[in-house]
Image (cartoon, rainbow, N blue to C red; front, side, top):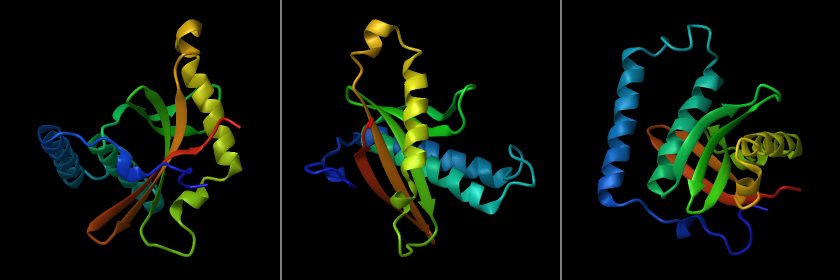
Length: 170
């Protein structure tokens, strides 16, 4: 199931040197701002696992940008549906709805296995809601896919596994 036959995360286009430097500078600045005011945005009652998830989403966003994705939305929600889409990004001409799963250790089951059928159903519904914002004629021509990114924050290292087209509309 992950990744689909013939799709490798290594075949993704890579950002140029200047783009990578700019992405790295943005990442550094965000980390620095977090250290200066770690509880300012979310308040003191934020659970540790939520902080880990937010760090993973941010790291995944920068990694996808390095791979050539153009991120257009982060933590997108609909007023009519529960849940959120972690990242929405263009990969060439494809609109990608990206679910990010973050872990601080490599356990028995990989992070991407947490994207179960209920989560997929929710993401499909949210993707349909997002696409409804486009004019109907244009909406039908937009190729979309669902990607999963596993982020492992282990010590000072961050590891990524990107699964393009991890699941489909059905």
